[in-house]
Length: 110
Length: 119
Image (cartoon, rainbow over all chains, first blue to last red; front, side, top):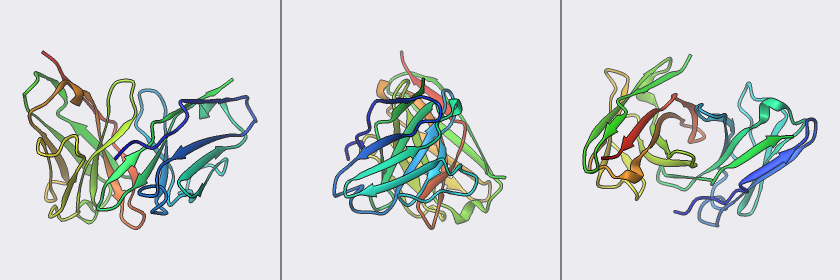
């Protein structure tokens, strides 16, 4: 199973919105409504942001939203803040309790 | 509060073995599948293995199949990863992560333990 494709980096100014794409295939992203997103600050463990393509768990800011179309999922961060500077990973369930992660995107707040 | 605490990482020579542990608290451990995910230095996340709540079912990434073994002791609320025939490319921070059953999402993660395979 190949890693899902994400842009290596995305940047934006404070207050702006940015979108991170996550492209897979009909065997992973396109097969299940089970894409999740994670945020990881340097030296820290990943933090769960989004599940089932677009749902936010309790406690996650509504500045984070996500969607999916076909084999591509997307994460949007609106009202960009300095604390959003981190690495972001998508992850797709691919059946039989197996998973594939995205290549990761470094978000820089200018 | 859910807590996951990994231990057992360290420096090991190529071809050697190591066993990682993940002590869980704050939830009914036996009711949840658990995962190991790793991250090589400066690289992205890679799913390694999953074990069912009962321990009866296990799943592995092709990169570790036949070399790694996931297990759990529900009486001790502890998850394990036995790593054999280690290679330089297994060098990574290893995280344990709880799986939320309804969504099969990894909702809680430990802080990770570093495994370095080098001579």
